[in-house]
Image (tube, rainbow, N blue to C red; front, side):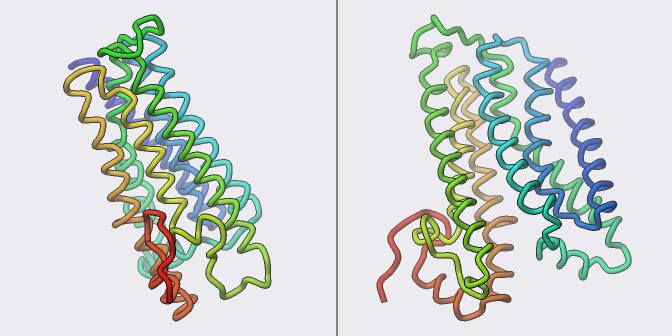
Length: 273
């Protein structure tokens, strides 16, 4: 218990300091969308700290750290190169917050956005803790509490998610970069089957990470709360609702028709007219 408390205290301190630095960066650039770059990195940092203090084997620790860092670097790198480095206008979500927060914009962006996201990142740490305590060995076989069955299944789901999210991000980026598509809805590739395939595959990634340690101990099933929390976050809190709010404002009836024919989250064939 002492080891658990110490690792979580260190993770809390790291999250506070890291998100504070991201806030200073956003304030300096006058673009608070930098928080999207920091989201993946703060989670990977929390994972590394918790795993570092664990008593598990190096195989168990890398089983979860490798996918987490691949996810974080891909996501943060993509957002930095396509949004921040290119001086892309601030995301409409944060522009909306600026309007709502008025004279207290910098203070409230710090507490209500940056610190809140750092706090939420800590809720995704269940798989990291159980992997940190796991006595996984490659020669333990595929089954049993020290077997690697769920590592294999988790990595398969993880890479399916990474590939799907990468394709979704690429198709959307290329669609928006074409001036002929201004005012139109991206319904090409995976966007034909889901209004938010990037969020769906993000969730698949976290299912993969969440199931990796679930056989390591009876209580490790708690790590499934991580993909559940991510699903709620993406589908009902900060993902789909925010994206669709601003899509409706900017595209109106065009987007309403897209909503009528295309599933919001889970990919499926479009409804026929």
